[in-house]
Image 1 (cartoon, rainbow, N blue to C red):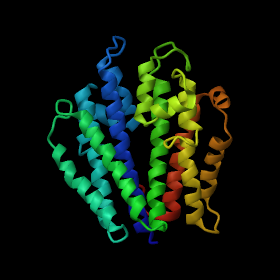
Image 2 (cartoon, rainbow, N blue to C red):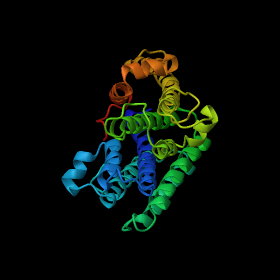
Image 3 (cartoon, one colour):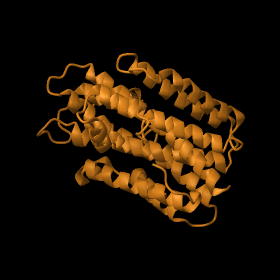
Image 4 (cartoon, rainbow, N blue to C red):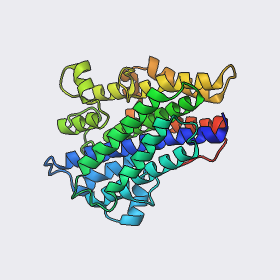
Length: 316
């Protein structure tokens, strides 16, 4: 496969996943804002959403004070923010258009319809006219895209690059979400693993569609270290770091063939940390430090994938 074609497929999938992840963060933050909490100001509540998206400096430059309406506009509809839902879906559609003949007809029609339907939200004040409905629409269209591509595409390199982009992006988002929760949202003076508000942890689980999974696996009250275990080490949790790398590692094995590559080594090293790791050891190391190191390593893996297979400048 031509590296340019692989690049478009890989980043198309990353942008679709990114749009879904941003919608999840906005949805859970908005729902938490409806729960009375005198200890948190509007800025305190919405700043973590910007931290997760890595856009706090750009926001402050363009918007100044952190407000709910400003964060929603910046993360959902800002045409100058490369990680907004608008920018991600636009970039996904442009990448898809460039490799239209490589996609199945159903996959192309799905992503093209997604972009056309997105026009219904342009110009709306989402805080006043249905932020929840907007986030649900983005999530459902992302699910539909993955379902259509999974159900109609040949299991060739094009399909593998789609899946690879999805799981690299998903792993990054899960790690950022969990890290921000521990590092920024704990009440002042409270140690990691201490008593935290039940609704905040429920919201984090709902943000990654893991609330029912948590109840099924642990069958008791929500505890921070168990949430971390579910989202880091549980291979059967679809958005966990372990589950993502259980997908990434064999894909890179297939793409590399008989040739050894730095990509395979980096992915295998990360996979082994999740496969053989123990939560007690991770907490002794420090969960924040563990997640920071993972985000850095995952970024390096993405850069190595770019260099090895895509032979094109890295996207945002």
